[in-house]
Image 1: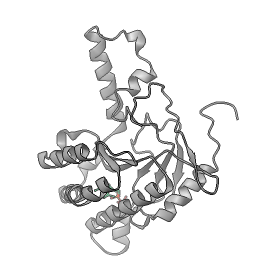
Image 2 (image 1 turned 90 degrees about the horizontal axis):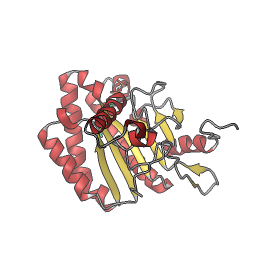
Image 3 (image 1 turned 120 degrees about the vertical axis):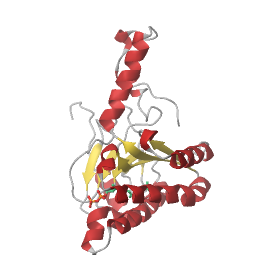
Length: 253
Ligand code: FPP
């Protein structure tokens, strides 16, 4: 399952649901709307994020149940560092809690946890928790949960370009050999299939720098639900919509 795939368009091997619809192999989610959920209830944003973490637990369970192989979620973008320090501290606290409290269950359920993004700005205790969680679950293969943290799609592409340029400068890579496959092998997601389905909640219709390269041929489903209200049933709705789409990867229909 974790063999590097060298073709540029890593087509998801979709399976079939009981009702005959296709199940996306890789679902990626922009979990948006925690703040608005809290505001609508006169609660601090913190509470919205806490409820958001609950929604993630539900969606992880539902993904395993539906037979999704890869679930990738946008936990914290490289731009989110610009939020008020209290909110950043709070989100990091939630992450710490998630990594400490959930890891036993995640491991028990056969989930492999990985974190992608720039770790430079993360505190050393969080980096240690991430490394421990990744080590502990490295042998699991029922479902791959990837959390994008301090992640930005453009920065990821720039970093791949830098690595390729350095290899070319050192003489270990012929610039003629820089193709889409070579680029893809230098992304955080080098050993994952591309997302088949990208979901964004809260009614916003933007990509926001999430998996830019990887989502070139993904199907997008935008839903009005705020993330803390998102349920396994909502995931099913998105998957059903995905199942009704005709994917052509640029070819004639
Ligand atoms: C977007 O809502 C959500 C986030 C920036 C963070 C997502 C975090 C969680 C779901 C918490 C649990 C996750 C982990 C990995 C511990 P927003 O704050 O942008 O909402 P708004 O647009 O309504 O203000």
